[in-house]
Length: 309
Image (cartoon, rainbow, N blue to C red; front, side, top):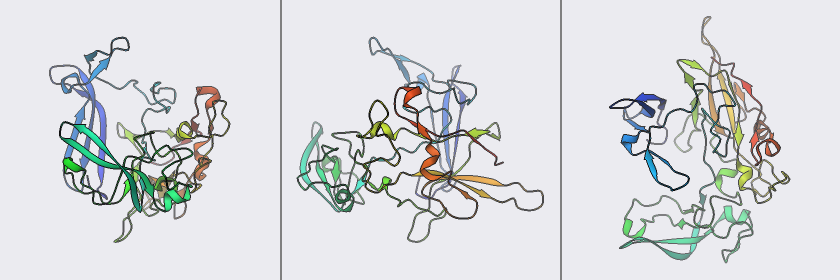
């Protein structure tokens, strides 16, 4: 896919060659005309893993439930989710430059030079130190300069300097990257110089939209201030220098003609103004911390009626 492409995603319980069914996802790129799919079947190498021996048994994975009721969730995930759209943010921090080089050995004859420290306005806003030390993050690595082709991997050059925050910890734990600033695109259509925001039709099943939906986030699990008793857990994250956390917005387009029906799309980021815009209170849409009932910090908003056709 390319930035700005229009796509459709079809997820369903599909027949498996030779008998049985397995979960399948088909993505159609309406812009390029290309299609790709994956089926979670034993024939494709999918397997269940024994908790006792770690041995794998070929397995056809199928939907866990027949309906999307709120209680019908996957219990092993950090979100109470079933049919959902999820943004995995906080895994990249753009930098002006990167310093403190190290070498990563990937295999026989395969090495890659990476850097440990991000220098630039994002790190400065979070009080980053020039020697690479952090109060929350031990390192920004893996970091790469713009134009890096990753050593013997000889990959396409990186377009910008930046860090993945994945070598010493999982993600941007001081919340200083661009995900946590109000820099998300606010228009639905890209221009010559600015990108458009992600725009999604509300999902359907059997040709009908789901009657309800809600928003949630597990960001508190990454907050150094969040304690097991629920104190210090907040949105935006207390130590986020941009004092921002992205949120969902529903944009309603009025019905066309006397017998037309209204239509809705969802956008993610910081779209808060414009015709037909409902940002559900911005950060407030994520509701309250569910630590007392779930046993771990997760913000979950109220169930919202999907009034859009």
